[in-house]
Image (cartoon, rainbow, N blue to C red; front, side):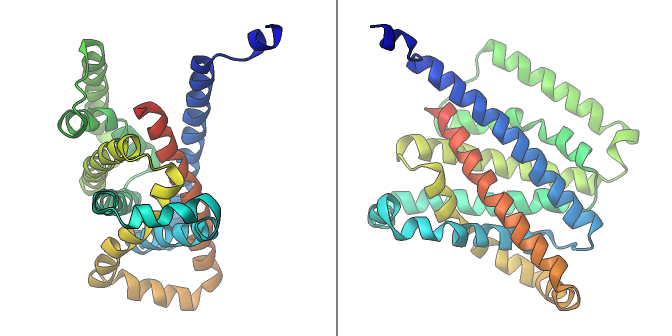
Amino acid sequence: ASCASKMPAPASRSTMERAFFVLLYLAFNATFNLFNRWALHMSGFHFPVVMTACHVLVSTILLLPLFSVGHYRAGNASVLSSRRVLRDLAVVGVLQGLQVATNNASLVYIELSMNQVVRAMLPVVVAPFAVCIEGKVPDARQTGALVLVSVGVVMAVFDKKTMGGSALGVGLVVLSLVLLAGQLSFASKMLHGLRLDSVQVTFYTGPVAFVALAPCALVTGEAHAAARLAAARPTLCLGILLGGSLIAVLYNVIVYHTLRLFSS
């Protein structure tokens, strides 16, 4: 009995796990955004679509050993044989690739601080998606909080001193928010309903996101320009693409796991 009393209650463990992953998410979100800001604005690698496409593809490659053995290998057949799972993974993958690319592109035009101020609107943008896709309606307290967040962000964005003079940069962040809201709502429903874990979602959505972004990189000329830079400065490009991919795979796993914790 004394041993049982010392064991933390399930609700307590759940709260601790949620708090831990929220802190982990905040830390990796800051790290990833600071890395992307440096890479795209200061290092000379001004190719957000190419960088995002490489990050999502290399993330899948880094996870490939896990899917060659054990639990994940056994689950491959059931995932790949389900049209519903493949459809939902495709939607999440396309939205993920496009939202990360547009957010990264905004860092070419605006400071990271303004980027994060605008992204604070995410709960407001997610709310209508959650109503339509998940059937979750915010209560009065949540609605009040969403209104306060909206007012604060609007005041900051329309302050010319903080905005930095780039309507294009702010517009790209807003577009990325809409795409991210759709991604999170679909992923939340998928993680809860289909019982996939965060590693599986990260692994399977990577190639989809790459396929969605590759034509954009080719059409805009980013792929050719990035290849020229890679020939001239191979060490820099390799560091940006591989280093960013290592952060990206951990960040995506944390994002999807945190989302699963709060959607369960």
